[in-house]
Amino acid sequence: MSKSTVVVVTGVSSGIGRATAEKFASRGCRVFGTVRSIAKTASLSGVELVEMDVRNDASVQSGIQSIIDRARRIDVLVNNAGTSMIGAVEETSTAEAAALFDTNVFGILRTTQAVLPHMREQRGGRIVNVSSVLGFLPAPYMGLYSASKHAVEGLTETLDHEVRQFGIRATLVEPTFTRTRLDVNAPQAGSKIADYDRERGLASSAVVNSVKGAPEPGSVANTIVEAALGSWRMRRTPAGEASLLSKLRRFMPSGPVDSSLRKTFGLA
Image (tube, rainbow, N blue to C red; front, side):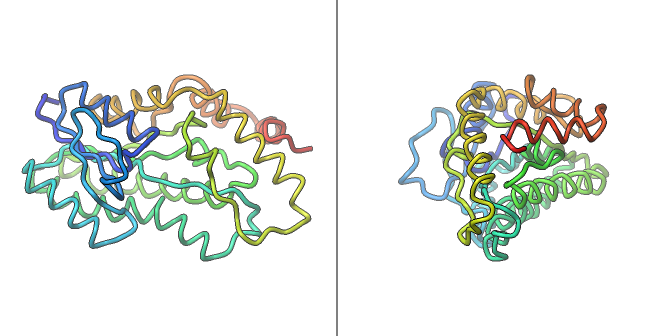
């Protein structure tokens, strides 16, 4: 794609989204980064900030239209905005689950539906949905987060079948733990059940320790940029642990994979 490529990245206030927006800008793209509050967001060199809440239909429609008004087109949409949660499935209320899906799944649905009419009209575009290794390898005490990422995977594969007739392709990027605030500050389910306390604590500690030793978001950002501007592939996993986990899931028997996962999370 040319230097005039117009890219929209959701959730650029910090972490992977911020690093991704900066990478696109360094490649000469015109980059729009969405945040819930511009006043609370540090400026990004080469990135035009747009106030938009992916949980709100009107906000998404307004935000995308403001980008079209300024740039006249959108070539790439990166659905990065997301949230996490730790808690046993039994502990997680339907309201908490709904809030998680509202950001991680319906947020993608809102932005995709807002962008697609413009991409169909221009007969081209690329939609990159940021999933997770938990989208194919569920983790204990992250059940609803894993479920939301499974939904993202299914949505993206179906979307790609439907829109390729218009010259549009959808693709997935599946990172593992990354050194950001997302997992370290993940909210916990509100209605705790004492029987889960020991294992939930072990799992929470394992997440924090994994994040401490995880790569910086720049490596994931590089993978996202390649997924957007390079040749199309349905899935991309950043080099390192994410790529290894993808291979283990595909080629190893389920028993050893299950045992390894439980060991990672400190479970008996």
